[in-house]
Length: 285
Image (cartoon, rainbow, N blue to C red; front, side, top):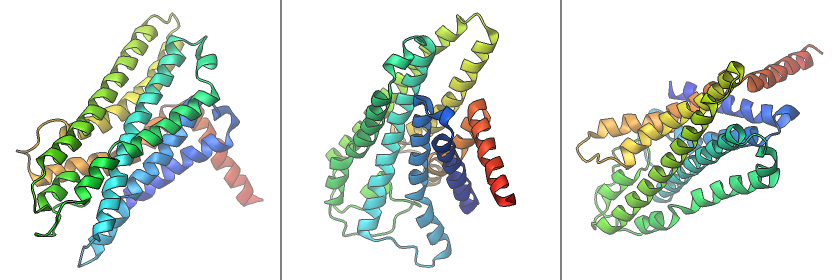
């Protein structure tokens, strides 16, 4: 099942990237952001799922110390980058719907590239220092991680020396990023909703609701699970529950994103149909 989900995730997100790359109608900031988001999702699942699949088939189920912390770093960096990408996508929809006349002059190609670059840069720098300090802790006790990936709480539980300050800083940074970005996203869509309700055309309202609705579904799936893990107090929750929640936001959500975006977007469906039809014509020739 995990292998099937992984293949579907790679296929769906790669299809979106190809559609945006090959269809000139999709060379707009909204779809450039979506293509980058799909590229992010591919790497987000790739940093955990292949190793998980190997462990399913292996009797030893081991990972090296450097490999564990590499996975830890990329998992949190890509997750942080996703938070900022969802913010930028919300900002893009806010401009397009609330300020449609100024949208082309504000959301230029240069600004879009700058925002995308900042998302990647901040995402990969956000947890770099705290993860480095965690890697310097002494791990001299049991070396069994009760999880299917290298997450912060299972790793901290293996440390011989308690490090409450580092753990507190890590969770504080995570909570700050999650809460700040979710409030920005909700605020943006609240303004979008207010603007949409003022649109006289029912067709215009429907198109705006369709686009923003798909974004909100992705936001709800992703933030709903990571807030349970990294913002709300979870000390009383079982390890099994932590694993299920982690599985949802790290494996299930990325496979749903291309389905949500492609099925609820006419331009994307049209571009994907053109690509598929083009491939069939090439095969026939």
